[in-house]
Image (cartoon, helix red, strand yellow):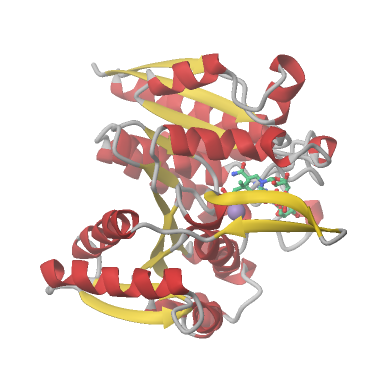
Length: 358
Ligand code: NAD
Ligand code: IPM
Ligand code: MN
């Protein structure tokens, strides 16, 4: 029996709905394999602002740092959209990523054969798509200083800073080459080196790191072209490594290859050993509270926790197989259903996955 403590941070909007689904699946995995998972819940985001006055209470940080893995739902929503940057729900997520040094965000993009028809793109384009975006998560525009507003010459101006240190680029490049070694051995590094100085340092540093990984094929691509190539020939990609903002945008774009943002999981890992696992999607205020959200991104994120966080490869595969089975059987939440009348609810989809585990 293996005992693991899991910090659960449901957050806002559909966050609690999809996190509940992931926990239900994990509880059943624990039962089937005689593991013990202890869940410790913490507040984050808007719900933490409402109850504790800030988006990342100390208690949440402590529960998270002491856990073996963190399962997060989503943060944010219209209720908190007018708060200043430092006290927004999203700040809680950025702060926990930074506090735990979770610099490597893995966002796998893989089409399910049962869902080929759910993508808005042609099936010849999306069949067999299988790549991973490795997004740098603790640097770049999100964290660079200065980040502020000021009054200059009688008008307001705002500044964000796109800053990368060589060491930050080096460690994410290493992750990318290591990931490629156990995949197809191809890395595309995405930047904007024709314009941005930080991208020129990015490109040079990735090239330097590549010297130690000459068995891996490396190419560089400008981000505007990459946005296009992702749609034109998505099967050409294996590992994409890129900075924080580009990775954020490209991953939402890439979700459309699979059919829905509600399918994409992610794992954020760093130097401390504790990882954070969360869907790529947000709190989806437009469908929150309706039992309509697709729980599969959160459930897959839990599978990533088992695989990358706990070394429970077999259990993770069991979850992935259960997801494939329910999709093949025709279960569709409204985001992937051909007709909304045929759609199942969040809880029905979750129950089906649990049943398929057996
Ligand atoms: P979003 O990802 O919440 O939603 C975008 C669209 O995708 C919406 O139409 C939504 O209904 C749909 N969608 C998302 N997840 C879904 C799911 N599981 N099932 C079915 N449909 C799904 O992005 P947004 O609307 O731009 O942002 C809403 C809020 O979420 C904002 O406050 C934003 O800051 C926050 N956000 C949080 C995270 C996070 O916590 N990691 C990520 C992205 C956005
Ligand atoms: C994501 C989200 C976050 C990000 C926001 C909510 C801070 O969009 O995880 O992709 O931009 O990183
Ligand atoms: Mn995003």
